[in-house]
View (cartoon, rainbow, N blue to C red):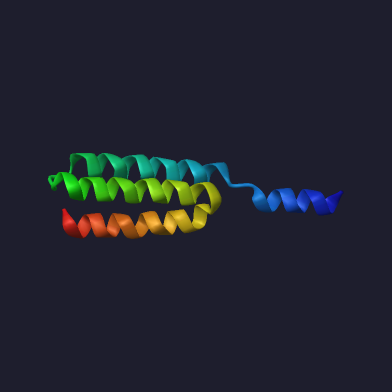
Length: 78
C-alpha cells in the first residue's frame, strides 16, 4: 500500500504553489489586456498565456518557469 501512496504523492501539487501560479497568471493576463500594443501582438501574447496555462495542468514547475520568462519579455517590451 505504501507504494501506491508514494505514486499518488508524486502526482500531487502543493496548493500554495498552484495558487501562486494562478495568481501570477491572472496578473500577467491583466497586464497583457492593458498593454498598448497592436491587436495582433496582444493576440500572440494571449495565445502564449493559454499555452502556459495548459502546461500548468501537466507540469506546474515548467509552467512557472515559462511564465517567469514571459513576464521578463513583457517587462522588456512594455
